[in-house]
Image (cartoon, rainbow, N blue to C red; front, side):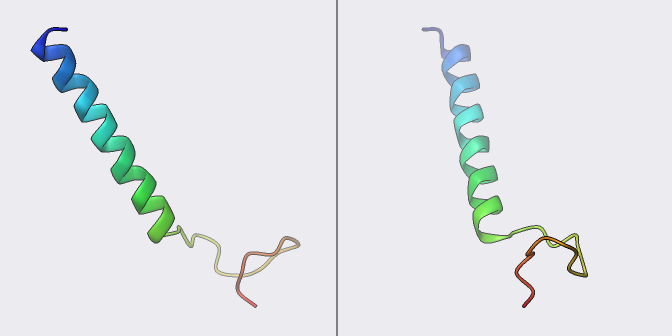
Length: 42
């Protein structure tokens, strides 16, 4: 493998890991009020 391909794959892997961690520890709270589904505000 060329170094360029390795850098690209490493960057993709790092970005995927960061996105996964952000989604796990910082859940998006776009809904301010509960609707028919359970949004975890009870």
